[in-house]
Image 1: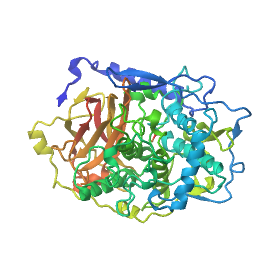
Image 2 (image 1 turned 90 degrees about the vertical axis):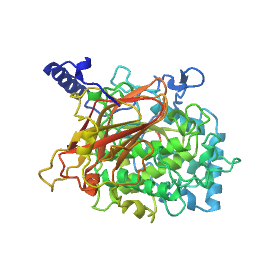
Image 3 (image 1 turned 180 degrees about the vertical axis):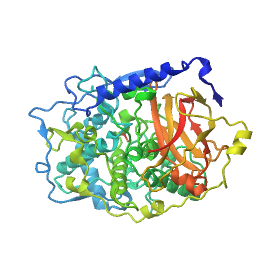
Image 4 (image 1 turned 60 degrees about the horizontal axis):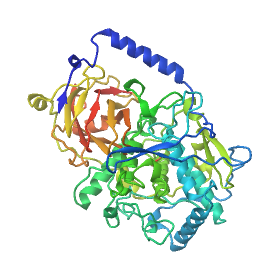
Length: 540
Ligand code: C2O
C-alpha cells in the first residue's frame, strides 16, 4: 500500500486548482446538457478491441451496421403492438418443445445473409458498434457513443433485446415468442448454473468459447473474487444480490449516473467521470467474466463487449438484468422505486433493426414500462431469498482505533489526498458525516473518487467496511461487504470513473452508524494496480 500526498507535485497547493476545477466543471455542465442523440450511420469507423497474444496490440474491428433502404421508422406502441403478451420464462424451467423452437429461431437467424440486419452476426455487431466505438455522438467533435458505464446501460440493452426477440419470433412465425432469462440469482431452484438449453454442441444455442470449468454443475459466482464451498458461494451470492439490488435503492446507485452529449467515457477525468450502477459494475460484469473463455485472450466471447453477443446466452443474461431492473422498480419492500425523470435521460435516442429488417428509432421514455412494451416476467419465488437476506456482521464495534494504531491512514475526498496507488489491498480511515434528519430519504453513500484503471486484464475492486484485514479472497457474505466494481478487459484503454455504494445499511447492521469515522478497505483482483483520487462518505 502506498499513499502519496500533494507534496509529490501532482496537485498544486491552495485555491488555484479548485478554481480551475470549478471552471472545468461548469464548462462541462453547460456544454453537455443534452441527451445522447442518433448517430449518422454513414459515418462509421472501425471499432476497437485488442489482443494480448504475444505483445499487446489493438485490433480494429468492422462492426459497421448495414443501412437498410427505406425511411427510418419512428417507434410507436401502435406500430409495434403485441397481440399476445410475451412471457419470458427462466431458462432452466422451459419445456423441450420451447427449447426446440428457440433453437430453430437461432438456426434461421444464423442462416440469414450477412447483409441482412436480422442475421445473427449483424445482431451481435449492433452491440459491438455501440459499445466498442463505431459511431460518434452527434453534435460533438467525434466523441464516441458508449452504451455502458451510465444511466443508458439498462435501457439500451432492454431495447436491444426487445427487437432481437421480435426478430426471432417473426423468423419462426410466432408473434408471442419470448426470450428466456438466465436466473443466475436463483440460489434454490437450479437457476444458478449455466442453463442446459445452451449446452449441446450441435445446437444453434451453443458457443464453444465459454469457460469449460464453469459448465454444470459449477455454481455461478456473482463476483469474480469468490471462493468457498457451495453453501458459502450461495450465501455470498445472496448477499451480493441484497447489496446491489435491495440496498442501492435510488436510481443513480442502481441504474448508473448521467451520460449526456459531450461526455467522453473512454477519455474521462475525475471531474467528468461516468458512473455505472451497482447492477452493471457488479453482477453484470461478473457474469460476463464467469462465462467467458479463459483460453481466449480477452475471455471471448462473453468476456469482452465486441464479441459478447455472439453467444446466445448473452440475451438470456441480459434478460435477467432487465427482469431485475423491473423487480427493483416494482417488486421491492418499501414500495415502488423511481427511474430518472431528467429529460436528458428520457429523450436519449437509439437505432435498432426491427423484425422487417427496417431501421427504427426509439427513445428512453418509451422503454420504461415493460407491460406497455408487451412483455413480462413471471414471479420468481427464489427472489425472496436475496430480498430477505440479512447479512450478519463478522466484527463487533468500530475498528478505527485499532486500525489507526496499525498505521492505517486517513483518507479524504479528492483532491485533498492525492493519488493512492492500490496494490492487492488498501485500507483508509474515512470521515462519516452524521445525519441530522434520520427521516430524510437520503442515502449514505461511499464514493470511490476517480478510480483509474488501465484495462489490461479483468479487474475487480471489492469494497468492505470495518474490515481492515480484508483481501480479495475475503468472503462477501457478511454485513461488512459493501460492493464490487468489475471491469472487463480492453487492453490499451484506461477508464477514470467514480464508484458509489450505499453503505448506511451496512453501518447499521454492524452497529457503527453513529461513528464519526469508519475504515474502508478496497481489495483488488487483477494483474495491474489501480489508482484512486480519494474516498468520501456522504448523504445524497
Ligand atoms: Cu453490453 Cu452485458 O453488455
